Image (cartoon, rainbow, N blue to C red; front, side):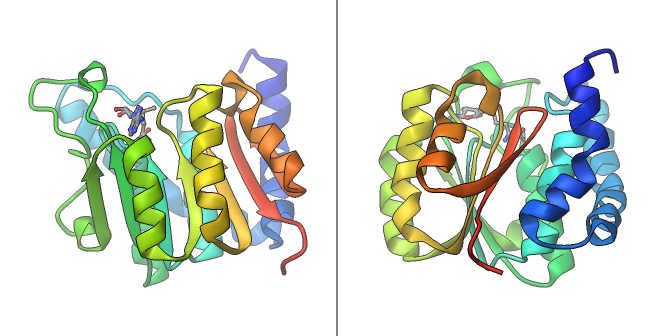
Amino acid sequence: MKNPEFLSQYTTRTGRLAHVLKTSDAEIKGYFDESTQYWNEIQEKLTKHGAKERMGPERLQILYACIRSLKPNIMVETGVAGGSTSYMILSAMQKNGKGDLTSIDIDNPIWHDHQNYQVGWLVTEELRKNWNLVIEDSKKELPVLVKSLKQIDIFFHDSDHSYEHMMFEFNTVWPFLSSDKIILADDINLNSSFVKFSSQHKLHFEKFYGFGVAKNKLTE
Ligand SMILES: C[S@@+](CC[C@H](N)C(=O)[O-])C[C@H]1O[C@@H](n2cnc3c(N)ncnc32)[C@H](O)[C@@H]1O
């Protein structure tokens, strides 16, 4: 690890995540350890198909620990590609014994990383029982989806990382988020939208090497 900022964010990650999620370091550490199994399963599947993971294990570990700790009933994700993040979320939900995930992806060919590509191809049949995959532009689908779900417990952004699109997604889901107001996002260092939105709404947020976790300060 040559990057000093990455190193400092990495060494403090357990405590910072425990703090923002209002739980103990031990609980978070346990979830990190648990996530290794799913990371290995994803790697195995990718290697078998000659594909490579874009996201390092560290970000998927943070995502997994959030879902295990917060135990959402209803969650929405934008940006699926092969489905590593969906796989992690659905595995955590399976361990929780509850939770449904709806994921939206536009099915952009530039994300096709091997011959028989289909959006979410990594996600197993078993995990799909709690998964609703929608192939559509989130600009069109997200407003319709959140309206039909009425309330969502966690929103995770990983689609178009432009400032305008990220702000659009955050603003669209905001009125439908339950009281904890949990927003997760990847690639938050590409623009200021995550930090700006979190600050505007007085959320407690933490950065984990480009992965953002934001939560209402007021709820227990
Ligand atoms: C960074 S990748 C997602 C990676 C995935 N979350 C993972 O690591 O497992 C971004 C994805 O967002 C999708 N995307 C881009 N713009 C979108 C939009 N406007 N609506 C829905 N999906 C979009 C792309 O097709 C691509 O699959």
